[in-house]
Image (cartoon, rainbow, N blue to C red; front, side, top):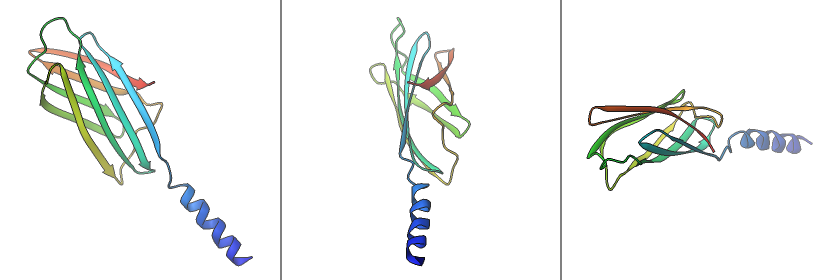
Length: 123
């Protein structure tokens, strides 16, 4: 009986650690579409990647400054735009707060003296 109790306790502890959730966020402004994927690997760790796509009518800018913010932190950069797209590099953290599925992420993109702000939500 003692072994069964120990086995049950271990199973409960391990089940709390196996999150494995994946959230796909997206949003659009007048000139940009943003796609952002968050993989929650445990209760306090995550990995995130994304893509920013220029949709404006003018030729795409050479560089942008972007910021994607959540209650769990931010991803930002000053990056080159390649054929109208920017890949948001993989970011990861352990021992951190993680983004939740129902959260709204705030995006800001700056280029050529212009600024666009909008929100990302899950699909």
